[in-house]
Length: 242
Image (cartoon, rainbow, N blue to C red; front, side, top):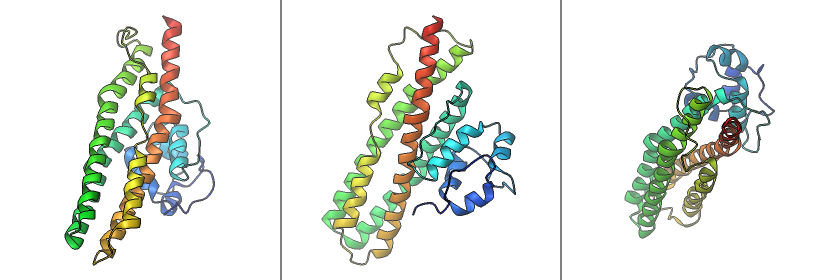
């Protein structure tokens, strides 16, 4: 289920051709709030029309095109708004679309097989969703408001939060790898579940888990390699100006 497109994506890359070869980028476009009707436009042209820094788009797109990619650009403070909006749309997708679909497949497998193993799998997944929800709520209610407040301070539109007992270091410590438990669930399904009358739904479930796992991995890397360094730079800049 890896992307077909090979090579580094650039500003000159034809976006329609890229989307046709890597379906993961369709989801990325949605997370960015972009229309899929791109005609014959290049990546750079679509970014210009939508007021998105091409370097941000390329960093995201190249990660979706191969998760070993590491962005090398120093992003601007102005990119924070786009990055946070992207992450928030991702959160909504996970909780309102992907997790319910996976849970329904698990329930269907339980109906087909009726085994104790399926009850354990369902319990395992429900615990994972609860853990994921806690992680995402922390980002939505603590991390993102803090980042936005730093951005506003740098633009002189809000008062200083220098006395707030919080920094990006706290986020790093809290930022657990939420992919690991998802991988454990996938491995359980591959190794131990009965095959009785359940091959089709098992395949659908595994495909959904692979796609979810892929997106979660990139989500985490965007936070680790793009968002956190930007927040550290903002904190440093505000400290210098105090």
